[in-house]
Image (tube, rainbow over all chains, first blue to last red; front, side, top):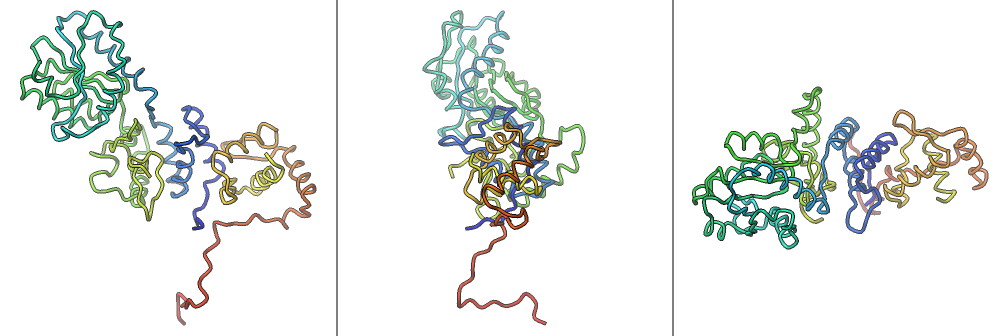
Length: 280
Length: 101
């Protein structure tokens, strides 16, 4: 079918290219990713003021690829290790962060776990006894009071799943003081939730809300995003990202806390998003 | 970049139109981005306040290419605006006007 979409103008096209170059995102489409193409198509589906908002948000967007995972994990893990330097630790147990309702499902924390476990650089941490456990069962069987449990994940949004996971482990006998959460990225809202619940969190990126934590023009931006969501029409509960997190993040799988315009597609009205959560 | 593509790029910029009209000719956004940066590198285009403009060299190149590709007058040569084209309707389809007077 011939498209009736008006192409984006030269100025905005240049701005998008500049953002991609600055962030070192690929412009030339590879065999699998056509993110630049999809960004352009996504913008073409919007009005010019809406395009300008999307360009502003894209400037703040954080995209972590799988190539960064190991490097980022060691950064976060080193921060954690520094915090336990003078403590008596019998063993460090590394396990994927999974909320109790998701037990048995495959989550991104498992992907991270399997990426790390086979090649983990134990030599750098030879003073510690480090165990990898792929789920909570062996952990709960072998946990002793001197052990520290590291729950690992790539992204934390509202923090609800963290609190649920910690409460679950606590009910099974692991004390809260012996649990640390390690994540590459955590949204401010999730971070505060963990602080309130007295859960220790280690991270590399602490992220604000994309619009509501801006210094000015919040009302206008919210109005524009509401217009955009009229077109995108995400399912209820996902407006401005799950829990209205307003995240601007893409990890291996785009978190549903990210503004849906970046990932939600709707065959009739909004067929193309640059970071879809499902295969097209 | 072929002369024809360069001509289209220079012509659209001179008309303040979107170079992304090339999408309708089957090029991808990243290819168009490359064409623009190539034309900029050759000194035909310049980025000004986040917009594209022709340089003096670009203007002479535009005329040179129009001559070379035998396009007599600039306004005789209009890019097809595929984005405004609609599907032809069937021979037996009945069309009712929006308003009946």
